[in-house]
Amino acid sequence: MHMHMPEQLVIRPPSEAKSLLVRVVRGCNWNRCNFCGIYDLFGTPYSSRGKDEVIKDIDALFEMYGDIFKTAFLGDANPLDLETGFLVDVLAHLRSRFPRLERVTAYGRASSLSRKSREDLKTIREAGLDRVHVGLESGSNRVLKLQMKGTSHKQLIEGGKKTMASGMELSFYFLLGLGGQDYRHEHVSESVKVFNEVKPHFIRVRRLFIHPVSRLSSKVLSGEFREQTPEGTVLELRDLIAGLDAEGTTFACDHANNYLQVFGKLNEDKERMLQFIDSFLSLPENQRAAHYDSVPSVI
Ligand code: SF4
Image (tube, rainbow, N blue to C red; front, side):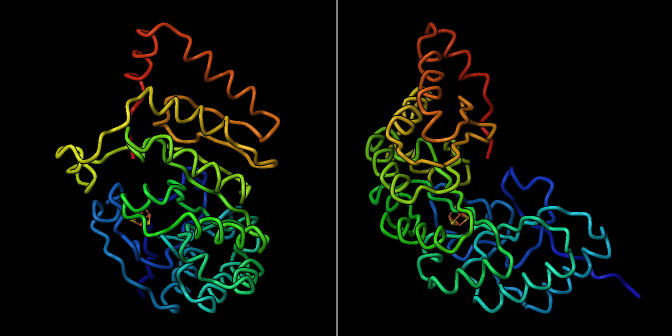
């Protein structure tokens, strides 16, 4: 008798390093963002999976590890685009196989979230999905369009608010530098509006890393996209925090490629975070440059 081998995920958020990883869909159903290319890079085109296959994977994961996990993550890129009934059945099976799970999370695109009804999101929450990670990237329509993100400022607010109302935790990911040098101010100010309106549980910050195989890389070469400078991304971070009025939101730069790792709870830690950035910016130029050189550029 051969053992069923569960499929592996391509990528998961850093906060899910110890999680049980369950693949409910392959790749990204959008897969067009200019800066991404992650699923192309790993040769994973989008395709759906049958519910029976996913259930078999969950059983096999249980056979392999037992009920040892506290957290689980559903992949790949956008499980929230799946039918509500599919998600509910998968979550119910996962929860019954792994009763010790305290948290189950997934990535979700804002366009998919805004398409789901309030009731559907609540049903998904009740079936056991505790948190969605949404790649907001930018709240600016111009930047979103330029980068082919396929979502809008309005969808981010609608999808974000609906998710918050469902009782799920919402984690928004913001990409410093995504507007390049040209749309820096709009990139930040429009994102601030979304954050202040939705007040998500988490704002997680990354710095844009332009992978050589991404479409954005050729736009840099052609001069169409003027890449943000290292100091420019630090100034963006400062402007972002300065604009935030999101009581209760946890702010985190939890990725290795950030030049400054700033953490705090809003609004109480806002001044402390700004002071931290300002003390860095007041260092002599050669020290700032040496710091920028010392930080890795990673996906
Ligand atoms: S950034 Fe997210 S939504 Fe865009 S192509 Fe990549 S995985 Fe898909």
